[in-house]
Image (cartoon, rainbow, N blue to C red):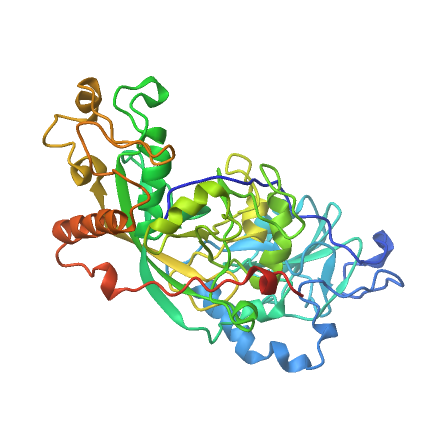
Amino acid sequence: MVVVIVLYSVSSGRPGDAGLKSAGSARDYDGTGADVSTVGRASSPIAGVEDLEDENYFGMKNVKMSRDLQQAANGPPMQWVAIADNHHVVNDEGDSVSDAIQGSADDCGVACDQNENCRSFTHCAGQCFLKSKTLTGFEKNHWNGYCTSYYKTADTYRPHNLALRYPSDAPEYSFYVYRAQAPATAAEYPLANVNVGSIGGVMWYLHDEVINDCWYGGIAGQRRFGITRIRRFKITTKATKPLFDKGMNFGLKCSFDSGECTGPHRDHVEGPGSGSHAIPDYDKYGFYVGCNNLGEWPHNEPVFQRARYYPSAVWYSLPGACPTMNFRKANRDCKLHFPGGKCGHPDGRGNCTYSVEEAGEIDIDELVGITPQWANRAEFCKRGGREGNGASGAWGHNLHFWDNIWDKNRNAQRTQAAMDAFKKKYPNMPVDGDLPAPRCDVNAKNFWTN
């Protein structure tokens, strides 16, 4: 949907777990699977089934789900992960299959892979205990301040909110979103940890913020950010159960800046480096698709009131892996703990809320009439041409496609021209009317109410 606009920012990693009892010591684990600790018995904040009234909550259905995920063809790679964050050991570890091995958790994983009888392992501050038991991630476990059980899985998502582990009953929606971008590169970056928009939202963005430049970055004829095209994507979304139970299919739109969710956050900490402040919402609702009707909070500033004159101007946020950190700083642990919502086909689990399909692109110069009348935009600008400036209200010179940002009828015509350009270029693909976008139904007050 929309191109870009970074108003907030994010910080980095996940905060330390709170509410756990004091850590145990080396004597808390003897390598046999027996818990000999007299302290540190707090249940897991993620997978503490001891806290559930119905211990069959993690029954065979859930074990099968975990195994299906692990065995899915062409799925994500299998990885060794902690059973329920660090310092938790499963109640039944199975038998040891070797003597203790010295090394890190990564060393333990390599050793287990090389031992045909090893299915899991326990790591205790520099020692590995290889185990015979196949773990699924849903086993009962207990806090241990010295040791951690590891198992291998392709599904590394372990949400605090247990409802996020399972598909939801929310409706599924498929619709087009758009993004204004610079020319294609050899490797297009994935549509994750970005903002996109409705066609009206993107056209307003171009009109108000992009078209005025003729020399951006010192390059003749270049618009702001080097933007030359409008890309279209078909996305399919499905809300998680906790979000849908509150009557919403979308959460609050987050402004992504260099891959970071930079706000707004419920504690009002915003801007670059504030990404970790999005964690409470991701923990509660999963990695939801966010939306915002432009002109309404959080984009209700005077500049965004002009967007109300464009039809159905909406922006969306699409959280990918590690949305809490700038992509230059995102690391393996962050991506494991915060996998994002993008998946093959959304089912409403916390890490499977949307999918993306490429659906074509159009050239902005062709859309507005710069080409073929001029050889290119550089030539257009050189000869005194200007597209206009929506922010100041200035009209164009030698080109009048963008004249009058305050005219709703003209804005509707511009938006329709873009949709017609897609239809002409891709006659066999559905048009916007065939895939109507659902209403942006987020309610900020309700979203942040416990």
